[in-house]
Image 1 (cartoon, helix red, strand yellow):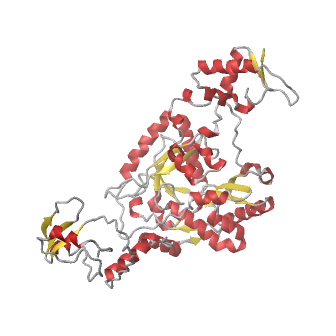
Image 2: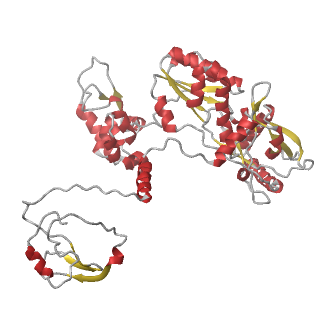
Length: 521
């Protein structure tokens, strides 16, 4: 140190100091390296700064003054490159390097949650099938778990529910229809009037109403998180089990790989799985057909919505079905394991023949476990024609111009990937990609497009008719069309770009389609 020699005159700047290395200005080999961990013990706090600018400092140490700092050198004739390799036998360094590589490496198998391991083992030990093939499972209770009393809470909440339903007769009608179906299918049985049944734990219930649903507009949800007299709920004393549902991104990518899509839904998936009779006492609810009747206690016989471990039990049962019967239906077994998001099938195949084959296999495979696959949809009309009409999901209609609007691709970040985008492109619009375009947060009248129906109404008020001619027509009063669109733009506070987007709607463009014209009615 240093790597080059300096003039001996440099030593004169420190002639009054006792130096630790009197020949510090000469380049020579390093005898010993001291780490920063010993620096506080050898530095005694003294410090000397030379009068000339640009010279290194001298720090006082137990060995004498140590010259430290930067010094410029214009003489490069003696410059040489030095390579150094430092090795240490201390285990701490080895462990540090090892931990660095472990941090940088991808972990193939994450350690399993001990509770999840217990839940899985409980399922394997407890599940069984009845004579029809339906699965019977048990809820995975935690050890030493004891539920308190929820009877009075459930009665009060049921009375509140009845008061609400009395004010909403249509909702009550649907609620009753749901409960009647629950009982008629054998998914719940009456065990007696509330005054006759000594039921300590009772689950309150309420409904989720979806008017737009094509199958189940109302669904009753059971509140297994309701606390009991000892501040515990059914959900708090159950293991939830591991997350088994497929990764949605992976599922959608796989779905886009093949030509023909195949989608479906398992009807009443949870209720196709029976709960062991020994545990049905934890599924007591209150219900009566009419407020003039006594309140009755019903016992739910199947896996129930609202119970913490129900999602695990439902998906795990499907996996078990694939394992038990999959050898007979290999293609369907793979779709059952990899193509379901809870109860929804999201799958694709290469051709119609394969689609028909896997559809039949899936129906048969699920039937063996007591499940029904329905609400089929596909991009293949031929496939849907082969299925019973009552098992096909009605197609979504996109021709309602009052509800549907055209948005230019440049204003819609969702179109970026379909136009072909690099990761750099996505970074540029990351905020819009996750939050949506900024104009979506503005009042609707400021949005970049208007519905074609509104524009037609505007034309109608001015007794003008929008005419799109056939391919042989030629010539149009483009200025008239431009003037009308500009007037519409001014009245609706639209920008020039908005007007252009509107004019391009369904080929309505005075720039690129000279065949479109306006006629007086």
